[in-house]
Length: 118
Image (cartoon, rainbow, N blue to C red; front, side, top):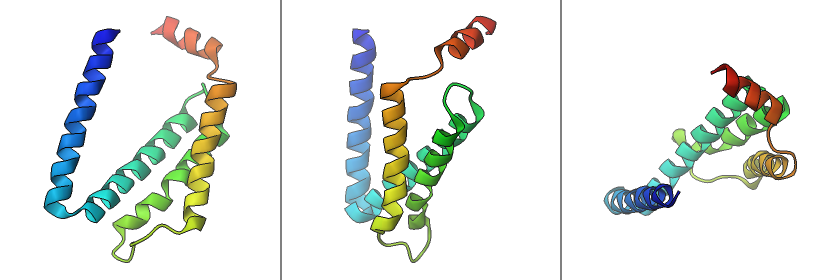
């Protein structure tokens, strides 16, 4: 367990150093926007995986897909800022997933069934 924590700390430090260097080269604002695009893609992927799985309700996947869309505005040439109206669905999707995982968790019975089949 301790080696996993040390590995996570090492990987995090490496990404911080790489991100700092990228920000120095291309500018902090541009690096921040690139990070937001990756966060949006992460939310889209996470939402699609939740939609395909049977461990979490499908509505969480829909909200996570909706949560990822506003961050992709930075791919457009006119995308300079995030509107508060665009951030609200993102916050709602992330918040719903957080509350669901804290309150209900995943469907443990389906989880163990699939693990025993593998």
